[in-house]
Image (cartoon, rainbow, N blue to C red):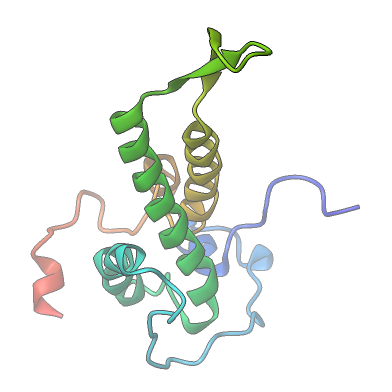
Length: 160
């Protein structure tokens, strides 16, 4: 049986939240700062998602060498989700399937949910699950406090 309750907060999030010192694991292993490369198995369209998010996540210390596989799964799921949406828009959410009689003539039609709906739902679940791990959902970001008292200046990143 797995661990009960919500997943523990990462240590850097605990610092940001101002958790008590005795609740912060100061002996947590820290990944080495190495160059993070896009996995070769990612499709070209998933690589564009990687390029969109990875630099900012890496600069904030959220994406490390140990997180590459999990983030690649997020990018792959986001790519599959986008493809599923395109297919559903092009072909519809419901398919008309012909029903044949014994002579091979069309006797009628039955309606069937598009298989792309299943692809979309599974990709949605993965995007939400893995995106939350990297703070890519509004509710996860709303839990963070980065100090300074107010909203940060978006041009601040240009100075570093």
